[in-house]
Image (cartoon, rainbow, N blue to C red; front, side, top):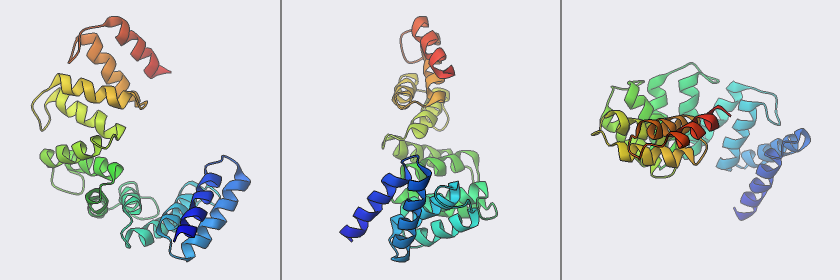
Length: 215
């Protein structure tokens, strides 16, 4: 298994090199590893078809590979399957199926899936609307440092959606998200400084952040 992991890491480096020949080489390596049922490779080989990286774009093939790894319990693949059902990538849109697979990934601690699942509960997509569940999953994701969840949870605290209004907490969440480059969080942070929400009013800082968000 160690050898497979090392091969997989080499394939990842090639895949992320930005060089088309390296991407094709990576895809061949991933295909070989996928045949050995190495789950990480199966999922990443799906990515190759999903985005047309190293392979000709084929969303149906991508979905099939994601599903193969997801059914064997890989959280990252389960998250991808959920995303495919939401967006209709390689499969018909099915929000209930999306929630099912996102839940499986979220329960394994997958931060991206937790954020996506929270959004489903917040909006009532594929499940009954449940703001408390949304807050629960946003919090779990945000606690892992996932920037989208930090920003989303911040907005819940700013506007009192499912929680008591807490502007200071909202500010801190926006700040953590903004540090990772989340543009919505940067805009929200600028608004905090502009209006003195959760932090001392600072128009200079607000202007600087608005300009940063536009860049």
